[in-house]
Image (cartoon, rainbow, N blue to C red; front, side, top):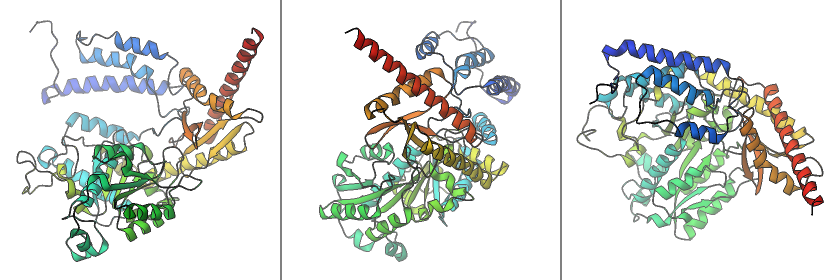
Amino acid sequence: MNSDTPLLEILTSARAHRYRSVVRGAVDRTADRLAAVAAPTTDTPAQVLRDRVAAIDLDRPLGSADAAVAEVDGLFTAEAVWFHDPGYLAHLNCPVAVPAVAAEAVLAAVNPSVDTWDQSRIGTEIERRVVRWASGTVGFTAGDGIFTSGGTQSNLHALLLARQAATSTTAGRATTAGRAAGDGRSVAASDRPAPALDDLVVFATASSHFSVRKSAMLLGLPERAVVEVAADAAGRMRPDALAHAVAAARHEGRTPMAVVATAGTTDRGCIDPLEPIADVCDLEDVWLHVDAAYGCGLLVSPSRRHLLDGIERARTVTTDFHKSFFQPVSSSALLVRDPADLRLAAWHADYLNPEDAEEPNQVDKSLQTTRRFDALKLWTTLRASGAEAIGRAFDTVLDVTERVHDHVAAHPDLVLVAPTQLSTVLFRWQPDGVPDADADALVAPVRAALLAEGRVLVAKTVIDGRPCNKLTLLNPETDADQVLAALDHVVATAERLHAEHARATETTGATR
């Protein structure tokens, strides 16, 4: 080794002083940047950012952690996208609770892996306690679950469990009668041969998260396995259409595997009617999974918890705490009503989690092996502020959204595309006299112009076949006036682009 090659500084007891110095330096630099934020991002062109990254020679180290942290500050933090800024209105990204950020620093330094008890000890116990608490908010009186990397993994895990239940003659489809019999299966179902994967059906709506179809593909199901259930005008699953779709699948000789209801769709922010959907699932003996990745904040809402009535009847529930619980990424969990369901996909290895182990090994419940101790972030937030504070914060977001929603509905130059139950606002700039084609053509350029400028960030999507822009609110410290000011800038940008296009069209016509 060349004597000039810098040593790798490993965090040990002997380097506690270096840890304190380097991390404090990083925190100070980041805090300075945070305090100076005046827009959600910068106006630095994308190609300039790519060139800066490409210019870094990763085979020529800077020689010290302090120098590397300083480079990160100038390269990344100075050009970051800040979700806490009032102008950030694009996606389901939230500003984060300070106690959770502190917990992130702790877990990164200690670096436990909560796959087996002997790698985390009390970390395992804390995660188990947080999961039991979260299950209780759903209404699972004796539920369980596991922290995951995000809603996509939680949905995949839920559908894996549903697939295993549907295809296993020993597990069967868990009916009330089967549970009451004490064997965790339906006697009638256990006598049937296991259905082929090609015959399994997952029921969802067009508004369901894309991870539902992706999960079906990963689980070996054919494309036709995901059946789209008709929705009402607000985008919510129609229970009558679900009952018809299940009956039709059975008539075709196919096996209903799961129903995926959504408590907070990504675009419309709508919540499927959980009680009547659960009625259909109970009647038809079909696994009900509720994707509450977005709407899980309602679980602790002081004023809107009723919007999730019926969620306690699901077999599995996805919760993304890094959305409406204001936690740093990643912080998500799959929650199950019956802990036995997690054993449907358990796997044991003698060197890690032998089947006869006396300690609780979380890897028995997880798709992952090595896994971060993300539960510490929610634990610390609950201990610092409590669940009601989280719920009030989400309620504040929804209150502001209602005001913005009403403003858009009354605006002479904006079209409100769809109502919402959560914190999205779908709209299109289209004053009287502007043709649909022109309004549609402006949606993407408006978003692109705003992103290039960096002052206000919005999203775009397609609803009922037409493009529109979208605001997504998730900042409890952004008030309605700030959002309306940002919306005014969106309108001004649309007006400018429309005028520029009109002038360009006139010029082109005059030169022909």
